[in-house]
Figure 1 (cartoon, one colour):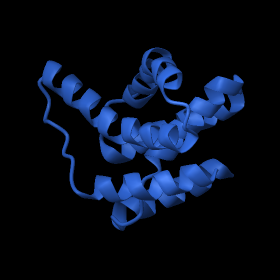
Figure 2 (figure 1 turned 45 degrees about the vertical axis):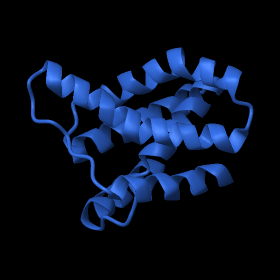
Figure 3 (figure 1 turned 135 degrees about the vertical axis):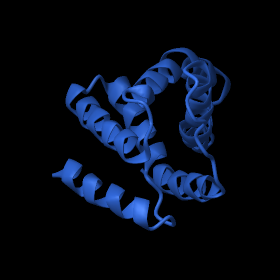
Figure 4 (figure 1 turned 90 degrees about the vertical axis):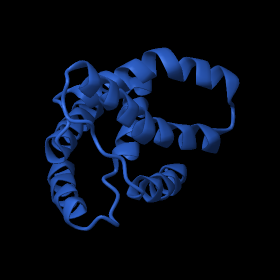
Length: 136
């Protein structure tokens, strides 16, 4: 049921640009699923990420590879340095949007594909999703 609601919301967010695509929240829930080792939540988040990639034109499984890389190599260092929970949540959302854009930029440069665009709406998405993730 949650996947169907996300499918509906994702289709609306491509039409109405003021609706964030919830990519930062998916990263937040990816981290939560990995920390709790909840495979059902992880599979749901993976399905939602595949839907996001298909809708936005990203390479398949690129977000999952990026999230796994950040979770394994970057987040342990961040958690050692920063103990402020809202600060970590804000960094999660930043890493989700800006970091994933940099990751896809690198992939597109290596594979000689068209470079993905980053517009001003991303700042709006980061702010909105930070507020929502901080409340969770």
